[in-house]
Length: 197
Length: 197
Image (cartoon, rainbow over all chains, first blue to last red):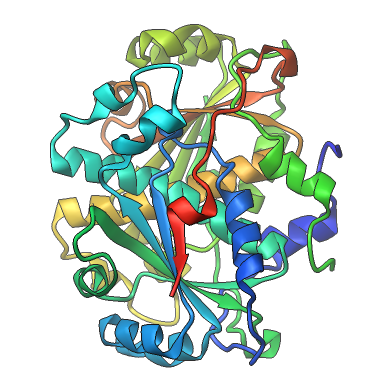
């Protein structure tokens, strides 16, 4: 096993990876989505709770169901993306803990917490998993187009009715046109965002 | 630039990477922490808001300040880790948007939202960045030991008093003993966590 990633690989998943808005007409196979998930699922979460649940919206019918929930600026690119992943979180993640954390009664640590505390914990850990998912997608050659600009309640009604899952964010997946990218926006320098004490 | 990561590299950052609890007595230079941040900062956030703020706790004095906030089971490993990163989030992230999102008045989209809505948005995006940070650390040869088991209010009082930053999670950093790892816990299979529609 290598000890560090080389510069090309760091470019692929971090430095040259960009949020794409224009997509090549090139399908994404379900088998590749599964490979991405199988990498992403290995990343750490609190008590291994793994609250992320994903709906991969691929069919024309499912895209039409998603469409009314999208902010105007996100409609066109999302309708044209080969896949749109709805990154959701199960607020009752603790039901899976007897399987996921078998060496202690971790379910008892969470099951009586109020709903807003559960949602806060689920949001933290689902967002971690959503980031693992995007970096795994890039590591396997896909481009990502994550979005928060949509109506969460409408997505939940259309895709998660009758469940304890809530939408977190959306992520278009496919192969983007590099020539259609906007210029890279600035980031905060180390001194602006970090300190060592 | 390569198009996909090879199997060894996927092992390094996903498949064989583990949460470490026992640390080699081997320091982590500040320059390496900066390299990790400089990769992590490139990952996407909503409107490029980049709410993550990190305090790297390295000195004995700063570790002693952190100690009373830790859950009992996290004290020993954290005191022995070469570095403990406090992954925090700035609830007033919108103050940086004129720099980070210069092509629109993104600050106006957020600045009048109630505090709980701002915290929800900051938590989502800081957690994404925290995950980028951990995968970047692994990509540069560090091991991670993330933790939620601590008193957030005590950490905020000790490290973020007088600011609008709140702690999200902690992450020990260094070089772990592979022989001291627990067995890998199960994960949810694709069929349990995902569907394609």
